Length: 147
Image (cartoon, rainbow, N blue to C red; front, side):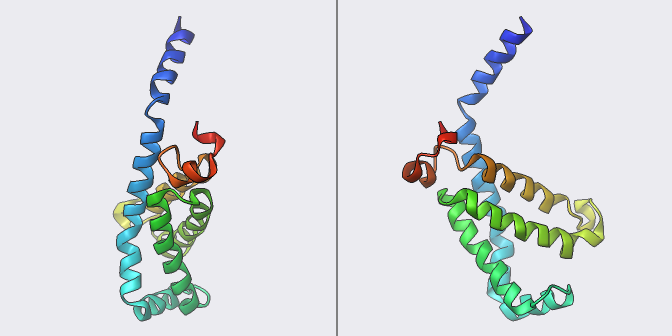
């Protein structure tokens, strides 16, 4: 009986899964927006900040990271090349964890790794499972994981 009930629950939650994936993509893209625009608005300050954080090649890294974030926002919003851009954004989050948030511990209240870790986990879900049915990836590439 329990097995049948769990099967029914699984079927029930399989219907809106693509809506959940769409919503998660939109939320993660929105979350990247303000930090990306702040970097983009003043690249000199971003490069100086990267230098203060001891990030290698701070000017190049500032432009590279900002470019990945801006392109990533657009691609996540429309669901195009979602797996690939998620991997690039995962590396950005690893950099944020190591260079920016790591020294502050885990808690978000202390600017710790909590939020970038959540972003990393969501991005790993997109990298593994794709963008869902409501995406250009599904329209253009008919990814099998989207059925």
